[in-house]
Image (cartoon, protein in one colour):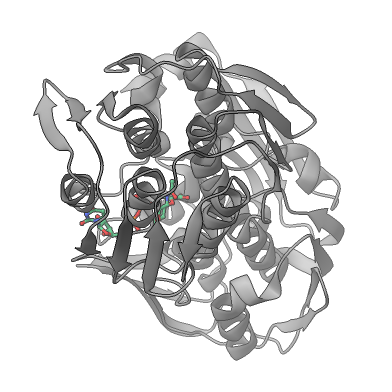
Length: 428
Ligand code: EPU
């Protein structure tokens, strides 16, 4: 087990490249199950969630070649093997195996998904969608059993706007008989990416990226080649970092439109942002930075996944800022850790109130989830002295080659093996 160490307080400069989108990758990989022949996905991030899904597809008979971010999946020998336990529980996105396996084999057994603990994360809307398509769904000892004689298109209104449910219903519906309409669908760029792959495979999907998606089922899907979109959350994390400790940083491989809500907030604070074709340049603007309030919303609103990293930046602004998370009301586990680093923050219900400016101090902290980890890395870069971050396995789920990428900007950051005593303390 390793920990991350950062010697903070130094300005960073240069160019940093964004990898392929994690939240697309974790849906694109299961989507390959639906094809009858080989699918190649280019530009996948080198993160543990991708490795985990690769192993899961191999478990059900997939033949996979994965190198330099390019994954080729031959799904022709896959079978509807039950996956009630094991790896499937380690990542939340394993729920996409439900939609893909149900769509292809008309049956699936998938252990209830794991992932970051952000408060309750129900999957009732996914299940409502599968049932509307004609599946019988039961929950037996922590695994979801899905079975259908045939899947028939249906009209499905999502009570909650959900990325996962929208994608999962698309996966199950592309091979169903007739038309499926998803109303109140989520509009995140990752949904368009998955719809693009499925369309290239031969699916008939209209309206992805709007709140009504129409899918006309087809008999079969074929292999194809697809390039993944850049990770807007990784890009956003780097932009926040650049605003916090940058002396001029180019974020490379980013679609500026995907991070518009963040650009608007950073500009409101006084940060300079220039956007190019697939680059964003972030440089210091007015000093001191102004405090701002943010409220997380579904896309194109401010993403919940950037709320935690943004909180670290707010500790250096003058005055009082409020961060409200309307998507995950309990996504505040990073706050206690930031307090250890000298931040003045209190949590009231679904909101955190940050008072600044303060100079963060290096400390020993623990990443409780992926984006809490990103928040602590940014805080570590801002802090005076050494910060030690445990819970690195969460960060490795979503940020590829983080140490190398940040070192490239001049950061002093490294991984170190944890001692036996530290591992014991970590478990407490
Ligand atoms: N919800 C329900 N019922 C459902 C599904 C969702 O009530 O059946 C609620 C959730 O509890 C939440 C809201 O709806 O309050 C939105 O959840 P959504 O389904 O959109 O989230 P998700 O698909 O489980 C994805 C990302 C998350 C990201 C959210 C919100 C993946 C694998 N995960 O989760 O990413 O926070 O959308 O944008 O795509 C991360 O990358 O760190 C991460 C957690």
